[in-house]
View 1 (cartoon, rainbow, N blue to C red):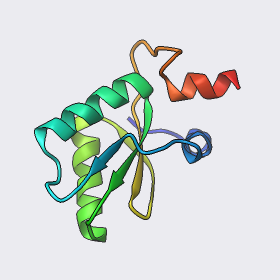
View 2: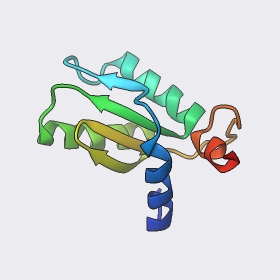
View 3: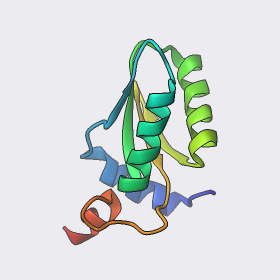
View 4: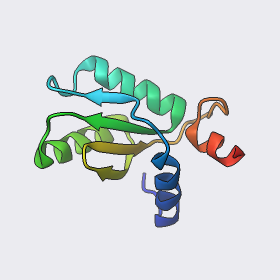
Length: 104
């Protein structure tokens, strides 16, 4: 799954106003964190994840694992925040950050 530059730009604009839904701290990627990220991606399609206490290499590895495990696309990483996207099969207009942004 790969997204084009125009979509990435639009996703970054939408993601700018989002707050991190999941925080990954010292314990790293636990099973519960993976389940929460999966649920959030299915509900919201575009989510922010905050990474606490990881250096640049650890964060890059974390992004790779998340993208592989969730079949998602990394839109952007800035500082300790990751913006992930995964298209939902049936997006819920009340929960999907992409559909709610179109309604504005």
